[in-house]
Image (cartoon, rainbow, N blue to C red; front, side, top):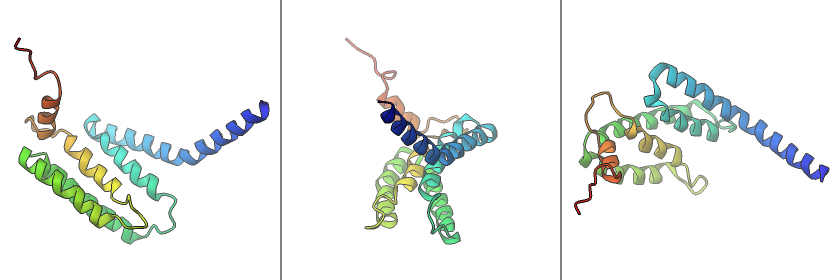
Length: 153
């Protein structure tokens, strides 16, 4: 029985050692984003952490990959902002963008290459803008919650 515990303890410590850079990156990112931008933008940290987790041990980290990440990520942020401005734009872009991501970011060697990019597009429209308007995310939340439904009988 003690030998079994030591094997489990060694596996746990190895897993913890492998996960430490990702955990540290998330915690530092969370503190920085919360401190600079506030709680409203904290969901962005999860997306950036997924990018970090999938790329931090690769040998092919080139400036080209980071430039591509910056360009595609920036375009997705713009599309996310546009999709949050009206319900029609939200529906249209949510139909088009995921398909475009799957076709442009996936390959037979990296079938889930679109996943991190899709997270950017999915999470950022839910960040409420400071305008005070009812956004499409708020509208869907109102439709799906029990707050807007009253029993008439």
